[in-house]
Amino acid sequence: MPLANYLKMLKRQEVLTLLALKWSFRRIERETGVRRETVSAYARQADPNPAKTFPGSGGVSSADSQAFVGVDGSNPAKTFAGSGPNPAKTFPGPLLPPRFAAAAHHDAITEKLDLGLTIQRIYQDLVEDFYYGYSYESVKRYIRQLAPKRRAVGVMHSLPGEEAQVDFFQGPPTLDTGSGQWRRPWVFRMTLCHSRHGYEEAVWDQKLETFLGLHENAFRDFGGVSGVVRHDNMKVAVVRACFFDPDIHPVWAAFAKHWDFTPLPILPKNPKENGKQERSGGYVKSNALKGRRFGSLEELNAFLRRWNRTIARVRIHGTTRRQVFTHFEQTDKKALKPLASAPFPLFRRGTRTVHPDGHVEVEGSFYPAPPHLVSQDVEVRFDRHLVRIFHGETPVAVHARVRPGEYARGMGGSQGPTSSQRAFLANLLARCERVGAPLQQWAKAAHEERGVRALRLIQGALSLVRKHPREVVLAAATTALTNRLFRYKDLRRLTEQAHQAPQQRSLLDVHESIRPMADYRLENL
Image (cartoon, rainbow, N blue to C red; front, side, top):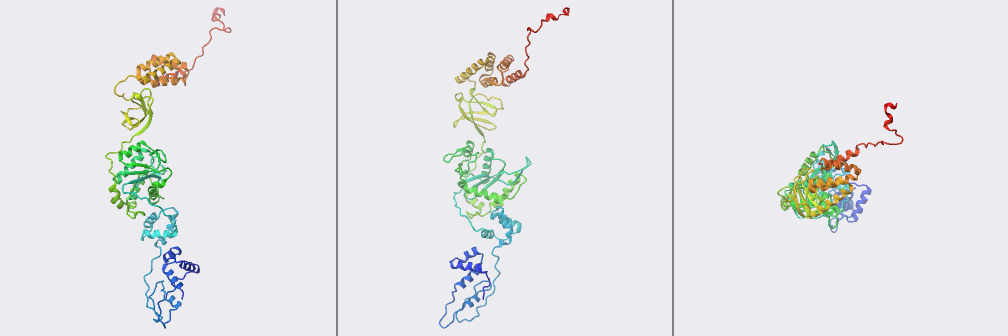
């Protein structure tokens, strides 16, 4: 009697061959798609194990043993020798569910796999679009048999509150309401390495102010600060990437000191060191954002907050096997450092050379530095209210911001010119004398009028000689001295006007071809 679940010859030979190799029924089912009950029936046929017989009793024939296999491939009650050909009556059990409940949505699943969506995202879409009532594991099993090859990965463990990893990735197409164009914003993601709880926010740029503000928002969302923040070698955080000793951006270093964490750049071109964030960012990109478009940046951020609250937090993480937000509440949140009492006072910085007049220039304004630092490089840190001057790591001066073109008040009252300033003035006056006496006289008068601030002015007057004829500059200096004009813009205007005025050609009064005027009297006509 043939088997109830009849297989084609090729599939039957495949099953028998795998049975001969001592494969398990479950493994054969996974590789061939034949149910374990059917494989079991073929196993009994290939290697029958009849019940023990007694002397004088006939054994059960192979054909009879085949007859005892149930219609649905079940194993009916065993029979013993001499019991007769009528085994115990068996009743058909309940119908087995389909092997893969997700197989009913095969077309939709393969279409989403072609789009590159993750299994979690596919499961969410099946629930939302088709009211799928089975478990997430059923979808995973079905997709695994579509693509059975899996790659093993390592796991790096972190203590609660020990480390967070950050990175940017490009978001979905979003309408820029300011320009009316569709753009791809940058999505910032910070992930706590122990619980995998994260914070994400979309922005249009990766400027330093934006970068620091995103960290503050993430810390406030977590309710604390991790001990280490690991990041890649982005320009806003690392001035110079190096395998052994990278140079951290001074503002980023000051921000880390204010919030009490250690900034830790990864090795150049080695994203595996930031692996948890790379995987977490990929999860946000594929699960939350792939295939979507948003009408504004505010709409995108509102969606990210809702997605984090309803999906990302409540998921069971594949590595920890725990619900993400519950794990965060029980571990990371208790170990995070407290928040800073005040926001970080954001500032900008730059390197300046102290001019011989003892000032440094910051955005068109001038601030005095200590006289002993003339011609040396100093670091300036400035915000909307203050300008701080540093020599190395030592603060040497603090000034209130003034409007462009203005000079801040001097340090410690009025001071006479230093020896270096006197030498520099003498050099400038000597250069003016070589150009012409009028320019030297105007330079001396300008220095008497404006003091050390006239040093830059005299340099500007000398630069005019390289652009205009010397006679024109000397004429402009004479006019400026007569009218007591000691500003560079006035001297430049007078020079340009004199240079652009048409020069009159002088006519000769006496020449052999010109008759004297007396020859043109009326009486001679």
